Image 1 (spheres, rainbow, N blue to C red):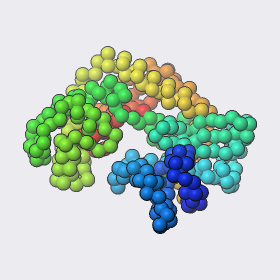
Image 2: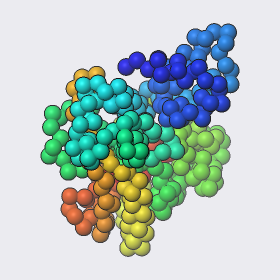
Image 3: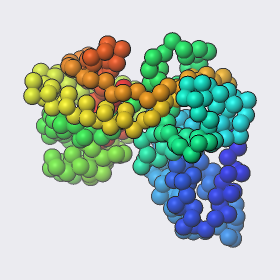
Image 4: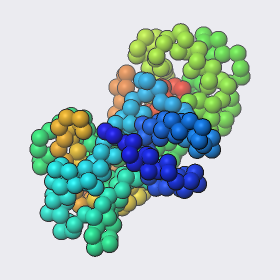
Length: 354
């Protein structure tokens, strides 16, 4: 996929105009790297202010084995390609435009890729009648020639929402229990030669547990560094050479402590979050396959948020805790997962709605 032409057009602008441009704001990691390379190729006229701004967005760089960043990079490239196909009216793009008109009765004039941290949808569709529609793309690399049998666009792809666990009281309760059962374990500190003091619970919750990235407390940074020196590439989950799954210290007790009050609060919080997510998406685009090979697609109209009736928890050794939500309509039952996002036991506790 050749991104250079659009990047050069952007670089012809002044730096303030670049930084406020919707195209720049929506750029993902791969596009930013290419923009930086092209700006540096300008040699003597490369602008330090622009390079600095790009570098700030590129840090922290994704780990090679960080599945979340890899998935995001693939999604970013796919959405960029889909928008290009529609806007250039390629054969595949014309097929998408025609299919969209069959469902919505409206002609697409152009589409703009969104999907920055400030947006919670992927594409803005501009119609020839002057109206717009916010669209969410859900895709998978696993190609299926016909998506007609699917009833929901996220059935074969990633979660509808993944956010920090402190947006839900149950996430805070889990983190507090992890602090008590794991962080405060003096054996852990001794075994991994952590010489600094254990942070207070408030510092650990803010700096490590709900840090959107690597741990930031001295204790948390030492734990991750020393643990991975001894067990390269692993986390505290008894996988990839890790000797023990520290979730065993927490998950069973957590599930046993989950009570009716916890349930009712969780049902209310997840219903509100799901309502916000679903109300914002005015249509959906489901894709299947790879942009470098075969790709199929299916458009969906706006989907109303399902009414949630109940939730139960499941867990097995070697896994994270799953929350199984029961909706009024069985087809809309779904799961949430409570997990660490940057290495089990290190940082970034998240709650995913799938």
